[in-house]
Length: 394
Image (tube, rainbow, N blue to C red):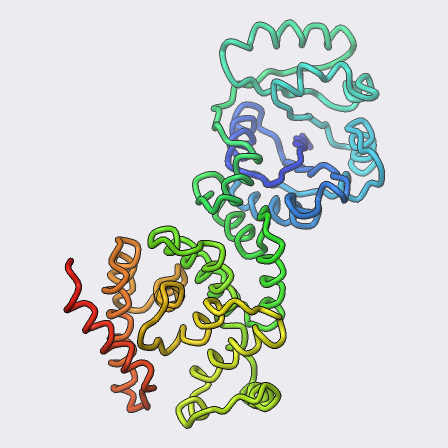
């Protein structure tokens, strides 16, 4: 069996990696591919970089985009100490004695291959497939190939369409809150988002882990989407983006907590609940969630607490942050109800007041049609915004 081997840090794997694999496969027609993430010292994996298991999972997700049989191997991530390509090839040769191996690498790696540890062993165990990025480098690569072939190497040079993407670029865009949808496969994008990878905000990571243990998968995803939306809206309307993101990720922290347990929190926190809150878990989780943030997580910022407290009902005279969280809860990416696209256009199009009124009108209509009680704060919020709109110059 003709097996291609492609190694790298893959932190994360991205579309340029996949493009290279497709082009090499087209040129050389392998039977299968082994993708081998490199080992990274633990101190380098903490915080800003993904760990071995996360990189392995992202590689597995990305390989679903390829048409050839492909497998992710953990040979190097589980190997203690330095990991050398010669050792990897020796282990593969023992595991698959009937295979012929081709080692894929880019121009830069190919140029330095002659200085690698036990490079003669690499030449013996695998054919070398060097991928050139441009016409300019072909003659130089052919010259280097002849030098390696004099030492026993078998070299092929393949031209690949070049996508100008790097893992560093992907990580930087995640840290700055930019979209990476065009840089990585959709499943990898979602994995990075759900697992908070490549962010440089320990507090956000702390709260992400906190809600992950309290919410269902769907509610967890919703909370991340609200945090993302809130951060974007804060940038549009001049609020603190970090504060908005933190309030967004925490807004539903008690949403999936059983009512009996919520009532225990109310007793412990000496919170008096009105009849509306007692009747509706939807209202209960917001008020008690704000108290939980203050009493259990030590969050004292009054803007964050107020935003969480009123994200469901709204209220009269809402602060900018409260308005943003209220709106983000309606227009986050996971929402699919009728009219949400119009509301998103308003919210992201610098018409926050209109988006809020649309959301309140939606809520009032739904509650009235279902013959459910309407909290006085919701009515007050709607009336206050109507008066504000009538008095505003648009």
